[in-house]
Amino acid sequence: MSTTARRYFRVTVPKGSLLDFFKRGSNPTEVVKPRHKKSTEQLIEKIEENQGEPSSSSKSTFIPIIGKDSLSGSKSGKELNDFQIHRWIPRRSIYSKKLAASFQYQTAINVVLDSTYTHVTRRSIDEAAELSDIQERFKLIKKVQINFGLIISDVELTRVHTLGQLRNLLFEKLDPSLKVVDEQLPNAIYVDSTAYTSTNVSVGEFLGSKQKQVKFNELLKRVKKVEKGTKVGGT
Image (tube, rainbow, N blue to C red; front, side, top):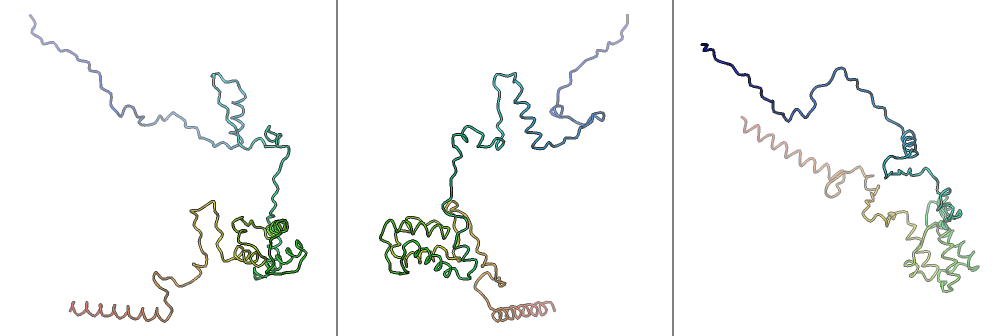
């Protein structure tokens, strides 16, 4: 009777690891094709071709291309019937032309305002002349805004009763030293270029050349005292 011990083979299933989900290494036989960027015209052409084909799904999404079709050829453009909005205030006014020929803005304002006033009212210049005639006042204010290329608000017109007051208002609004503020951007930061023209840079108050030299000499004396103290202590 044989007493040889039997050996049993056990088969265990290896457990999966988290790293098995990630691709490790690369296949040397795999050829990576270079990706070429398509131009905007090619992308638009591809989108139009796909939109022209019948979609297999019940819901097909249409991608509109902005700016492709002009407004004149559309339905809304035909309904406008070539309607255009004309600016009643020109981009380049008579005042801007006069200002280019003059070095002082007040001189240009006086020339344009005087010619506008005499043309509308048919009267000579009188600073105390009241603008009480409603029809004449409307014509004058409109002509002033056109010739000067600016808009005068109704609130500003409430304090204009004479020709002199109108002149002072134009002096205030057209002052080149004033900052142009955009009401649509209340949080905008307006940088003053004149603040960076000075060569003197100081954190505190302004120091002249003599004051700088005195301050420099005082600091130099302090440095020399500190150097002497360190030498004495070292010896």
